[in-house]
Length: 267
Image (cartoon, rainbow, N blue to C red; front, side):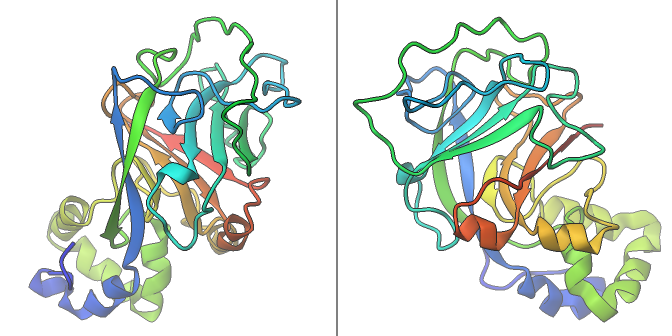
């Protein structure tokens, strides 16, 4: 990441705004074909479950499928993330991967679980035998993908609603500039200030539109990107889409994952 963002001349008036959005995040590298312990960070595969925890099910009583498992002991330290524990994201085996467009925080067909302590000696080894999922973004669900994490920095791109929010009084001017020349500057921002890829934190990428864009209260309530799983390396959300999970920064600080907003979209 450059020390200061470099912008085209027509965007120089907004340089200070972009600088305000600068944020650290964790880039996730997913690797296929490597062995993964049950308690390690991964995409897909079977989860780590302590004794006494029931395997999560959807609203119809069917088993949910692990989309991601993050072991915070394996990641580089970031101030706003837990220092230890395992965080899991489950989705349903249906054509919307468990998403409810009417209530994107309703965890009836997706689930977020957090276990603050990890016991590598005592955990459930006799997990349910899940059927092959009919609908899944993973090419091979039962082959877990090992994850690596790298600390990066980025700015809010044009698809994340935070950019418009930070623009404030300059938003109308920014929109007029963007609309000139058949949105060529929008294309420049999309290419050079991209928020795509697998990540924890930072800013979100969307194929369609940020569902928080026209709802300031929702943007304030779900102000932090908890996890983004993109289309790449054995993963495809619908037609080349991307999935995001959002949380309130204070709830994340307190390791409270009871209120998480889930979204995915595609072309």
